[in-house]
Length: 191
Ligand SMILES: C[S@@+](CC[C@H](N)C(=O)[O-])C[C@H]1O[C@@H](n2cnc3c(N)ncnc32)[C@H](O)[C@@H]1O
Image 1 (spheres, helix red, strand yellow):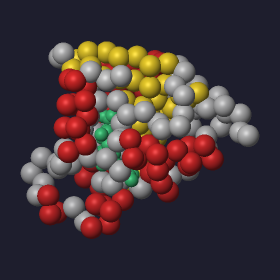
Image 2 (cartoon, helix red, strand yellow; image 1 turned 60 degrees about the vertical axis):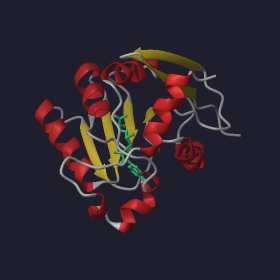
Image 3 (cartoon, helix red, strand yellow; image 1 turned 180 degrees about the vertical axis):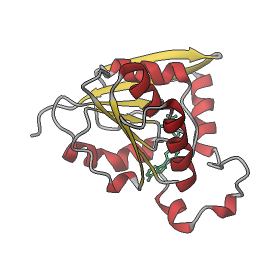
Image 4 (spheres, helix red, strand yellow; image 1 turned 90 degrees about the vertical axis):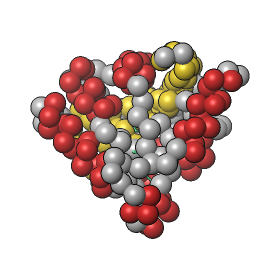
């Protein structure tokens, strides 16, 4: 059961207009708007760290952030945990921001940013998948995760559950009084 503050935050997220600094709403291409599964809103840094920890991030893991925004999850995984990371981002502008942040952090040997629709990404090498999308997007993505992820891999979603999956753990942390839920899912053997 979500708190009132959490529901308000989620509604604001869902209504957020995914604009970059200086970008007009009309400047996003029609193709980009059609494929967009979530607006740009970044996860707070302590939520990022906890998402990665709850999925057991480590040097030998490959992290995929689907909709990587400014690349903060990729940089944190590579810099703090020496993991390899791949960011998939539809927006060319956010993909460029993420690429610049990766270079700035000096972790380009372990991180790749792909400017791509996440529905077209190959997830077969991922050990950990991080998501901060909306519920409908998670539902669209679910069959792809079920088909491509290896048993034992971990999916972690900020604030939005994956309908039909049972989380192995749910943790809520407060950032400036706003509760953020983290849902952790372990991928089982294929039926
Ligand atoms: C809420 S932001 C999350 C950013 C980052 N993962 C984080 O947690 O800080 C969602 C991101 O998904 C991207 N996105 C939306 N639809 C996408 C799609 N079909 N393929 C790839 N990226 C997409 C948006 O451009 C946005 O940057």
